[in-house]
Image (cartoon, rainbow over all chains, first blue to last red; front, side, top):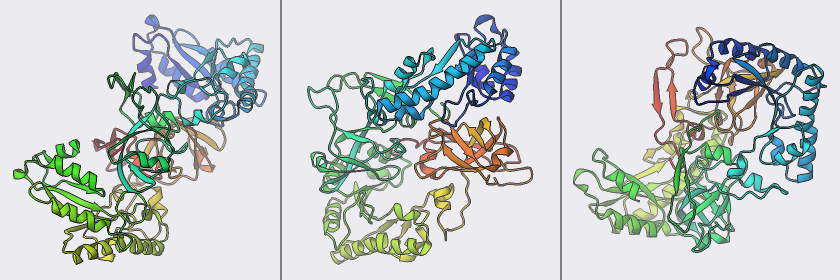
Amino acid sequence: IDRLLGLVRVPQMQHVGVLVDNSKNLRDLTAAAQNIETSFHQPLSIYLEVDAGQGRCGVPPPPKSDQALQLARAITSVSGDQIRFGGIHCYQGILQHIRDPEARRSAVMDGPVKAARDTVKLLAENGINVPVVTGAGTGTYLFECEGGVHTEIQPGSFAFMDADYGANTGMPSFQQSLFVLSTVISKPEPGRIICDAGTKAVDQLSGPPSVFSLPMEGNAAPCKFNMEYRCGGDEHGILVGEDTSKLDVGDKLLLQPSHCDPTVNLYDSIHYIRDFNGPSVDTVFDIEARGPGT
Amino acid sequence: IDRLLGLVRVPQMQHVGVLVDNSKNLRDLTAAAQNIETSFHQPLSIYLEVDAGQGRCGVPPPPKSDQALQLARAITSVSGDQIRFGGIHCYQGILQHIRDPEARRSAVMDGPVKAARDTVKLLAENGINVPVVTGAGTGTYLFECEGGVHTEIQPGSFAFMDADYGANTGMPSFQQSLFVLSTVISKPEPGRIICDAGTKAVDQLSGPPSVFSLPMEGNAAPCKFNMEYRCGGDEHGILVGEDTSKLDVGDKLLLQPSHCDPTVNLYDSIHYIRDFNGPSVDTVFDIEARGPGT
């Protein structure tokens, strides 16, 4: 709460919102927010988090229980100069990775769209207007839009994409832009090479990375190698397959992570390359929000 | 190679060693090492890496092939003021986590100990003395010592331990000293709470973390909670079990990682606490070697 209120106190910060699913947490926030100087920005927006089926945070949606109504009433009752009711947050992370688009669509309609619609309806029946319904991710945002109840979408992974999103079908055509640069450090026998990127370099909880070449002269995009990455521990990757014959010790390769978020989290900076065949690194972006909770 | 030679050029650096399993790499190192100014320290030590069965880096051990002899000859032939033959490196990472101590012992004797012994014998028969045989980790070092051929051991995880080593039996009695501090952020229903530590906060490739309390008054050690951690995505942990009733939103808990290396790698610093009941943080250590290859 102290860190959150630190954000609110930054003069340039026009809008700060926080999710709440618990009355004790709301009381703590309300008490702490009393001293916010709101003359230079908007009040702290409190969004009611509704569980859309993942069993993570969030109050259960109606008609299962009326907790959403109770908590929304509590939020609106403390609304004023320091706090306002921002709306509801209704997001389901696991649905992003359902492969088949029709199955993904149905799961969105039965999950976050239904939960959001039922909550908005219950609150409206009790005189509470919901300013914003926020949610959706890169895998499902078209379906939340189609559902018609969400008024704000939150896709983020589209900027990088990853092999997990690449395995979905019927996706909007975002291209892969995130790769881990690695070097071949050993070639112990034909058909097997070792690179210097292990679990500390690329997320493997969502599966092994795919292996790509550096783009060749005159070819702007990396090409997929016919080789399989196997985990070689914290610092090594074991690559097997026929294309290993094309690489020698010292050669570079690109790994396409299976999951972008926990891969980016491993690094302090990202090197942005506009054109692999042109001048090398265009910009270096620091990863400032790296860390456990960001 | 440039970074390695940068290390060698640090005046305080008395001894720098590097593993080699490839003649091209040896030639590149030899060429680059020609300009090392060795008047202020020892020559660069080149260790021959022998594959002890993991199928990662390393030449195959004899009698499977004589690559070890060929490469050792190549190393000794370029030895001089800049380079010297340091010995052999014979380590098998996967064996560290064989649960049963007798099975672990046998695997060490059949793996790194046999590979090292056969290599030392072949080299000795050909007039090459092996100054150092290095290898072993926290799970097996007693067995490499017992094997009698290793002259240097490399355990590291013993300083922290983790749940993966905790699942081994017959281990030397090192205590767990590494925990991730997390906060309960939601309590949506009885028997389930949510904490703010997901895959960005604690390695889960080796399995979910175990959950501990902060040490109680007068009790120096954390106590294990009867609750199960389930992955809640990049930023959340879902905790289920009867002890969830003991915690409320805002309460702290400790997660014992399943694997210490890729968990430490997620952070910029470690907070060392000598006594949970005494003055809080004793020292903050920066994690300087954080990153993909370190």
